[in-house]
Image (tube, rainbow, N blue to C red; front, side, top):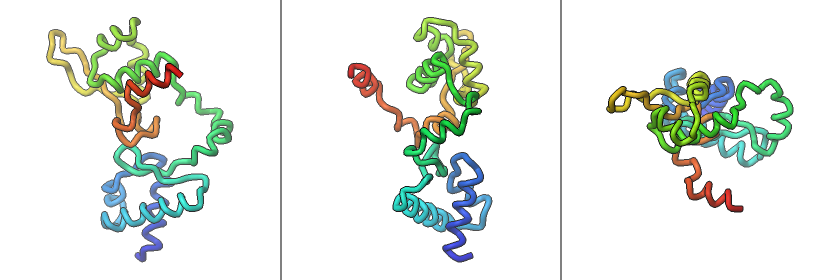
Amino acid sequence: MDDFNKKFLVESLLFVTGEPLSINDIKRSTELTEDDIKKAIQELTEEYRSRNGGFFIAAIAEGFQLVSNPEYAPWIRKLRTTATTAKLSMAALETLSIIAYKQPITKIEIEQLRGVNSDGVVKSLLEKRLIKILGKKEVPGKPMLYGTTKDFLQYFGLKDLSDMPTLKELQRDDSL
């Protein structure tokens, strides 16, 4: 297979999955080498960037994903009127942010910070696969420890947790 076809094979895989693919994921489903895959992703990234089109490749959750250009977000939102299941309530966002910044964290610790019962919200976030059980805390009662998932990174378009704004940056934004 020539370089031209390798590049379009990688592009096809990124297009159909709709989720981040690691280089190993692509290697497992093709006969391409790691160098072939990296070269294809680099070339595609440069092509998309130079033409400033409707989509580009983003490094998300330890992989690569074909995503829409944020410039067209208002029209995409209009089209996706059925995306109500993907929306998060204020309680869910609050709980998710606590988990993201304090992980690993127990439900009791979440409730202490929020000041309200969080059973339903935690259950909902688990069902949406935005959080997961990381294990049990080594204290009496052995409560579950919660943390964020790759789906969390994908939902918010983050490469990894270090892409999240710091608490100081968030406090600065609130004072504006």
